[in-house]
Image 1: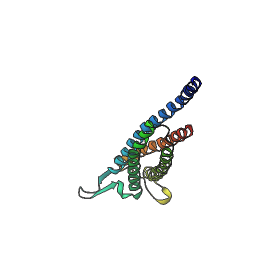
Image 2 (image 1 turned 90 degrees about the vertical axis):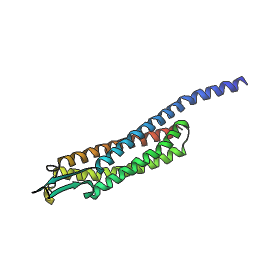
Image 3 (image 1 turned 180 degrees about the horizontal axis):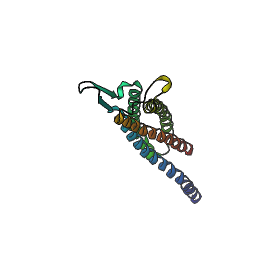
Length: 186
């Protein structure tokens, strides 16, 4: 009887550091999801509220630049909004992993969905980055002139929104790696 109790204590002590490590990964996952949600929300809001008007010859004739003039920027706002909504909803599952660190199937589901969201966010941020590059430097071969010399505030805001989105991309890569480590530890 004593030998069984001693063996049970040894097994529980051996499993304890592994469980603590997995719980730590789950807590880190939870906080990284919050930061990524804030980054994507900030990117969507910054891009979605970007517009600038410049007077032409008179006060009645104005040129304006708005984010929805380019479909790529509309896609960027939509993708960041979808990813932000997903991150907020995934907080419930991430909290569940803190409470029950041995759950594997839900971690695999979260890993798959994180990978899909990483692809969506990367596509949107990369497409928007290409347009921002052309806005800053133009393309002399296609006779596209840089517009950032005239629309300074517009270009600053769209460039800033890209930073938040690419921060979220890096956080998603870290989240996927954390999930893979947590799955392998179970």
